[in-house]
Image 1 (tube, one colour):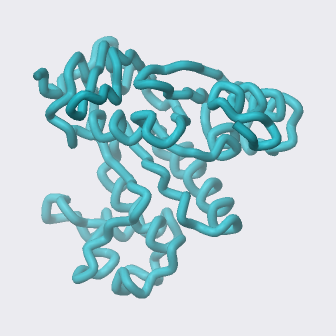
Image 2: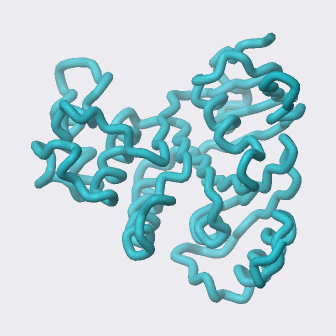
Image 3: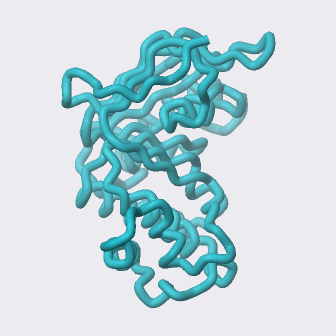
Length: 246
């Protein structure tokens, strides 16, 4: 068993590097000799069927799994926003964002992060009083307040309604443009991947089975001919027809 060792990546323009990464759960191999490199400032989306290993890879990159085998290196700090906001219910929103920050300017940094996500007026609210979109904004603020070199997003918009998701997509792109972390977004939504990412990967049987680069400028429209073509390609890589049948 080889544990993750968070060492500085070389060359410095690489935010994360994975070499021959393997993760087994009993007799089942979820990640199988996987190779992946994410450049600094790159926005990568990861697609795959349920059980394909997407969240397992994300957890490995976040340092939350010490039973992976192979080489895994992250050059700078890492932050994670999960599908569930995971806010501490007995701390107000500001305190949630400041969790883990050194004392001193923690309050000011938390308030600046909340302002970026449009939650200044909710800083003293309790988490249980937030809407789903507000809770995810707070989760993003908590991740970005640490100025991570690598931001990991584990299906953070899947529980939101369609209109809130559109708003969150715009917000994520604004925050990414302002801070320029490398981003790995795990998602089941092909359109979400196409609208947000520089590169889309499909994970299948523990390996990267397909890779597509997207050079269209943002903001993107889902009906752009290039995206329509890429959508068909990605659905085929996922084993789904454009009509939605397997």
